[in-house]
Length: 130
Length: 493
Ligand SMILES: Cc1cc2nc3c(=O)[nH]c(=O)nc-3n(C[C@H](O)[C@H](O)[C@H](O)COP(=O)(O)O)c2cc1C
Ligand code: SF4
Ligand code: SF4
Ligand code: SF4
Image (cartoon, rainbow over all chains, first blue to last red; front, top):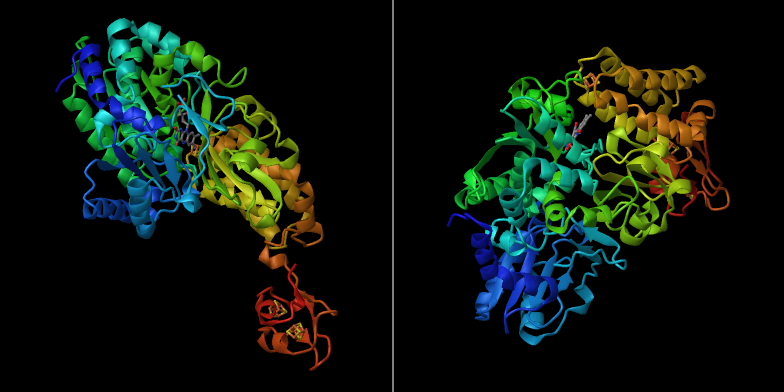
């Protein structure tokens, strides 16, 4: 579709707006969840691709329908890559550090399926944004 | 979207606002986070001069190193005579250890594209070029995907937002030299010529690519533009210090716990960046210095850690903002060696066009090598200082003009270390191999003879069950005895 006006743009934005709420503050459609994986050069070098695959497979294995895995850029925390952000509707987004394939599975089984946060792997982030 | 900088947050992200939050390969993610809205607003509601003025009023300055006011640069190009104008994004990012731009390109490529179309409109350019480091394959791939998507949706091409404005751009892969990041050299390289700097004036805004008025801006500079349009210049004005507005991304590296990218408001102190955000120095070591501005900058000592950073304050303490490299050094770092490290880089990257830079950086490097080898003389120190000053004053481009900075700043703040190397043949940090001298602690040595047996130069004297002694002048600092001793009796300098 070609955008010809600000109204055209607003329409597309409206269709995708649910992503903003879920990712910024955890407000999204009931039952929706997303797992964001930092996939830049540095993340991939530390195994983010394998992490992403493990997440996707585990979600499939558990037949979870409303959970999406999204490749994103990096949040700059090189020292704790691969990093993963878990957004479950109704919860504050949670960041995890050094998520290997093992931990990826655990995140799906514990955090996504049981609402149990993997406390030892939580990455404290501290930034505001424009 | 929150527009207000919260006081509690240590970091505040403008350039990196979407990084880690959107799928760079999905334009609808970018649009969800208000992507291309600034462009729509600019093209449907504003005149080019108004856009340039707005950016000028925001106080945005170039993030590529120079800190030139962006809006002013845009006005120059807009006002320059001629109807064929160009806009170039400098994505060469050659400063060793820096990867701010890469992160934006890989994590949020549309923000650059959107800003470039805005920049094109504001400067009267219909064509853009992204000059990108060839060593960034993933960034290149993601940019190409983003360009294709933007074209498909009409954000690039003809009659954008139905406004009658046309703009398109292409990628040009960098030639792999540090000097190609310098804007005049970059323009030569885009033209297919050898990447050598040319004299300024004329500035690119008068005569740049193919002799036409050209604007060159850095990736991070562009990334700040859409939020400025959306939130207004006052919003941006309200962040930062008197002379430097907004935020700056730094790449924290070296002896620091939290290696990575940070984006902080101008005016944040180095201490906050290194100790609060960066988590301090690993292994309980002591902080010694931090280098900003990469090979063009200087070292900053403990004494200046509370300086609120901005373009001017960093210059005042003998360094510079640069593009955002920030290398932290602990007390095992030898400052002469650090100067040598940067000089090795610059002398290697000097394009060779002017003698003072080509030969001068080489001579400086040689003197530094002499000093770290323990062969330096008093005259070498004098020559080094003189050379540094004359290269600074006579080089044609920024590379040569700033190459002596690491030498000058370390000579200024750590003169005693240079003198120690020259007069006492000592490297107190213990990093210059040629100056290390090993010794044995008589209290700890039990006379097991292990060290004696491994010493390749046979410079250890001793008998079984007696304290051993190293003849220091013959010791070549190979470290073998240190590793052989099971009783911690060998003292490393
Ligand atoms: C040796 C040298 C290397 C440079 N490398 C870069 C670079 O990699 N990226 C960059 O944006 N600017 C670089 N610059 C600065 C550019 O010349 C120019 O000032 C800048 O791209 C302008 O954009 P800005 O005003 O948005 O910062 C370099 C300058 C010199 C002297
Ligand atoms: S100062 Fe150095 S890099 Fe710059 S033009 Fe002269 S020789 Fe080339
Ligand atoms: S450092 Fe090497 S050369 Fe020096 S005393 Fe020990 S073993 Fe011998
Ligand atoms: S190895 Fe250590 S303890 Fe043994 S003789 Fe040498 S210095 Fe003494």
